Length: 164
Image (cartoon, rainbow, N blue to C red; front, side, top):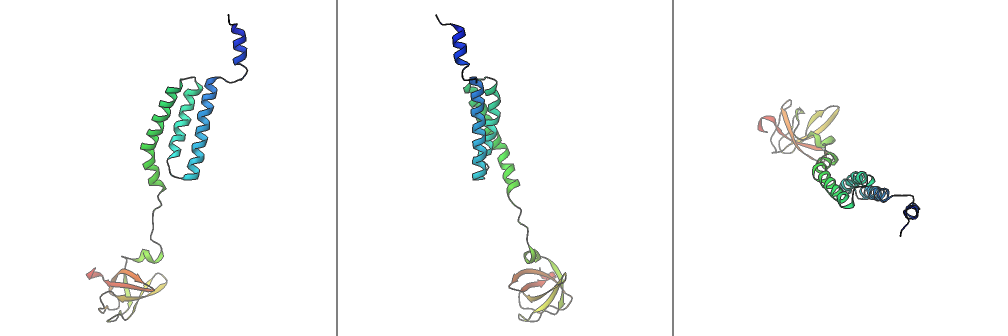
């Protein structure tokens, strides 16, 4: 015959219940997934970290391992499918045209006549004076509104606004 007091004393020797151990294993998986996400920055492991964190709750409550696995998989997949696209949109930096690139498509008056051929005229943008040439080689008079089409080196290539 087995003495229940001896069995209870033997199992109490570890000081932790199976539920506590399972919960700590899930928290270990959570920590591992967080580290994996930090290393990879792929926005994949983080969702499984969330699943492991949620699965640790029923584990600490003594819910069986099959249910813990189901909860882990369902939560991880829902987080992955629903939140990953949103997070990726937020993570992609918006490309903003900088300095000269931001001038393309803008309209300014010619400060000095843009000569025939590729004789440079002048545009004033803010405090900066730019050399400007006609895209098609035509003459553009002083004061004519022009559209900046592109930049070639230090020259703006323009066309009259009425042709753009």
